[in-house]
Length: 324
Image (cartoon, rainbow, N blue to C red; front, side, top):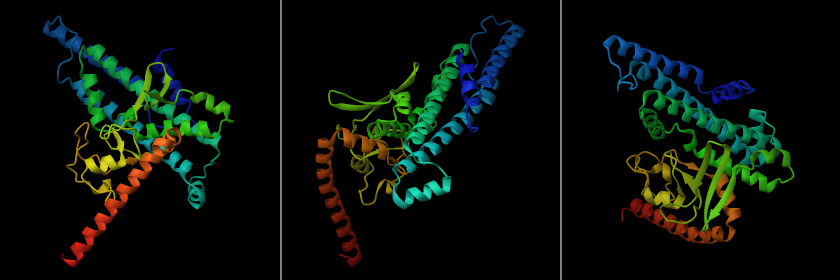
């Protein structure tokens, strides 16, 4: 079965209408571009009809704006649903009851696992669809504009594999797998999500389709150690919270939201990435269980640093207040 048909069947099989890529329409747009280019070349007596011009009216006005809009809708839907699911899973006591009451959602582990599976499948099948249509664009036009567009999408934070909620969902499944082994039927569908160690360095892996494999390195590129108290910047890079605060030139007390807009990610050098940073709670739970000795050591050392910074923060405020 061709992927386009498989994708359409998947989208039609969803109980609720959710955003997706109009693969059929995008393919029609590409065919129209090729036909128009061939016709224009025949009129002008040009025999080389393989290359799309730099400013193709069909692609610039239809193809790229359409896929940009659809990608934004897919990522927005995925992030919103994943955030609500994980909020429900991590909530406890009265807060959990309030979330359930507002959304009327059941909270047993089987339902949570199935919803998480659906979200991961949704993310990965759309990632495949985006990759295939951009590859087809480059094949038709003998260009690299499709790959360039993918890089542009990453800089605009609408690349679904870049979403911090994908990392959280993967950790969520591994955590539930360790907690509720008896739900074997639901969990068997998610054996593709794993935490692996290579030379003591952890990484998250997920593979649901042969053509897409997600590997997330869990080593902080600042302290070069296993990430502790993980936080993901809006550019998608993950760091220890303390390391991220240091890179943003803010204290733990002030937090990342107080970072200057011009503060840049240490890896990609993109600015304005700290205010919307996401705390990866599920990942922290997973690492704390899988690296318990290391986690306890970091917990002790960071507690000392947090106390030092808090003390220094309030001493500076007191001096400012007294005019010393």
